[in-house]
Amino acid sequence: MVRQVPGFLLQHQVTVEPYLGSGSKGDVYGLAETVRCLIDEKVQQVVSPGGQTVTSGSSYITRPDHRPPPNSRVTLPDGRRTTVITVARADGGRLPVPSNTQVFLQ
Image (tube, rainbow, N blue to C red):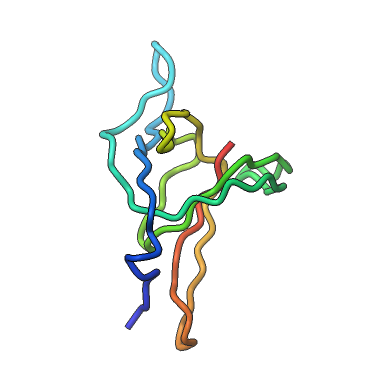
């Protein structure tokens, strides 16, 4: 049984529009989904899927099955819009720690 981040820790909500690709009129996004999460406003260096080191201005932690594609559009609780750089999954396995997904944002 996979332990998940306890619901009481997921104090914030973001809106995620999954990136579907580029079209003739620009980027294309899927339907918006509201995601309960815990936001971390910390600047840090992360490696993008393309192998570049980039600066992430914030991230959020949520349930382990949440995996938005890079470049997905995220609206934060204060209304700011940003995009997904990369996603990291922590699998607690049999340890007494919760499994979760951390989404790093520009």
